Image 1 (cartoon, one colour):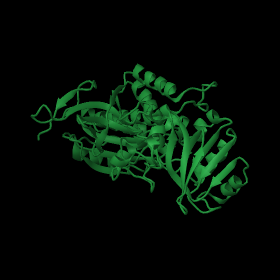
Image 2 (image 1 turned 180 degrees about the vertical axis):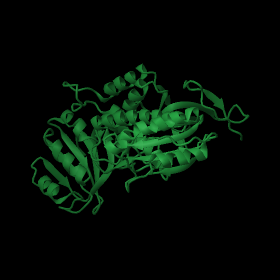
Image 3 (image 1 turned 180 degrees about the horizontal axis):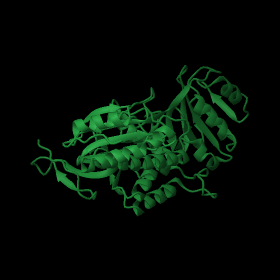
Image 4 (image 1 turned 135 degrees about the vertical axis):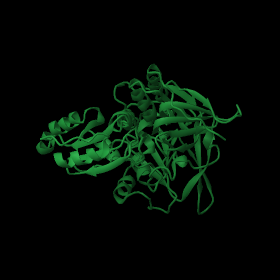
Length: 440
């Protein structure tokens, strides 16, 4: 199979066909591809689209992610009366479309982050791009009990007490799990519900939560514990009505009438296709720094797929905004690096300095004089190490001042911390076609 590759002159989603068979996968080219259409991915799309980057967002199921299953969101700023998750995500989606973001509802099968051109592959297409933003989110771990799928999310089973607690005011709810999240969320629910019944897999008094949370929960008059139990089935009509618990020691089935059920037995990030391609935590969340960089140039991660403490719509929005801005900066810096810093018209001399360091700053006029002395034989590029840190990273520069020399074909031949006039003239005279005498 032969592949033709060429960036379009304008980033307009140009299409190519791979191979001779028209049934083979098409190649489309974008500036940015965003994987995941939840709050973080949609926010990143808004920022990228507004920066006039040709942007594609891929979502495998429902635009808006898990937030769309929340009936009432009361803790997202700007909506004092609350707003439904679906309605909020529709606003996000509408805003992204306003900035000409393209959308595809399909599943990503594989990714290739090697090199400057990243590849995101789906069933029918290969999308090539300059930057990728991973916002694939996660999914709550479920019990696997009978009828569970029937009542997920807005039918009685929830995974977010912060989101749905108010809707359970004066109601009876069940919490599945006994870890820190389950017990702490259960105690939060007692502020609203009249009773919180907790199903615990362990013997009486034993939990997976920390000791402080355990003691507080046991002392909470609104909390009731059903020890040595797991969920056997969920029952009801259109809405959940009964949770059948099974006693692990006796095998007895214990029907518990509830208004809703909250499952807190863990969370699974959607990171399977990124394993061995991105750095991950022991829990398979993607590890990033504070600007959403994954450690792979041009690849960012945001939202619930990241290893972080608080997973909420508001924090996902912040992540997405940062990722979108950083992706735009990366693309712009890549173009500057290729077209200006490492231009191929003349012998290149790069001067790396610090604007806050007087000695290195004061050498700028000398560098400009040397460039002028060689006429059109030498091109001087200047990088402020503070403002252009990522450009310095590309050049492996970690000190200043420093001079870097390269040939017309882009081959770096010298990296030197000796920035005096004689040394620079000596090096340039070895590279240019017409050496000149050193000026005073």
